[in-house]
Amino acid sequence: MVELKQMQFFVACVEEGSFSRAAEVLYTSQPNISKVIRELEQELGMKLFERDGRGIVPNQEGRRMYQYATEILQREQTIRNLARSRMKNHLRISTNQSRSMAHLLADYRSIRREQMFMQALDRDTDNVLKDVERFRSDLGFVLLATVQHPAFEYHLERHNMQSEVIFKTRACITMGEYNHFAHSRTLRLKEICQESFIRYSDDFFSLENALSTMEPALRPAMEEAVISNSSAFIINILNNTNLCNIGVQPFFSTELHDGIRLAMLEPEIPVYFMAIYREKPEGEAARFLDYMREAAGKEV
Image (cartoon, rainbow, N blue to C red; front, side, top):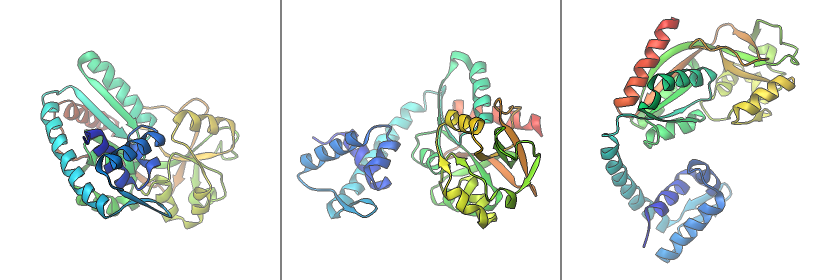
């Protein structure tokens, strides 16, 4: 008998185009994904995928199966939403990596204490969008440069999502004391094109990609950058090497991590901290969004 878990794994494989990316989305291992899909194919008595040079693609039977599986999961999600609507004290967030956001979440959690359950995930922008679109998170938060807005709004419209600007900040460069720009207060994009970088992700809506669009000479440095989704690793690299990182000026009264220096980019490059949601926030999500608006208002 086909199980709901098998449907979830199968849909993730189709949408991600590989077992490894599906494993990341589902927070499991690639061998486990392969095992579940193999068992599903044995249960159905048919192959569902073919391999190509870039990963896996559903065959004819797989495409039909995907249509049925998504319908099943959508109905299951509707049932979950009915139950979740009665639990007003649950808050699920996906957010770009941000010390300022972590600071605000900690303050909010201390105020709410035991009145709520919180799930907060550090994600690149592509995955924040997916989490909100697929109801894995009630709210998403991303940092977006002005040059990215048209493509971002087009994506939101296509996937029935809405956005709201919470706070306006600006792009900067962070580094440790071993970087030769450690005592600089301002830098121009052209000045950093020969630097070595560490970055959180290489997704389409990243700040690094935005700045590379504005200054094409920066792109080779971004393509050669170290990539890590660990904030602790990034901080250690900045503190102990000459690598630097593209970030934003801290907000919500947040201070830089010990040992990290900051240089503002000139001319000023506006970056917007934005909330994303698929449905009008209710319950804990609405309370948290109001809390953020109030915190942002105090800094203006």
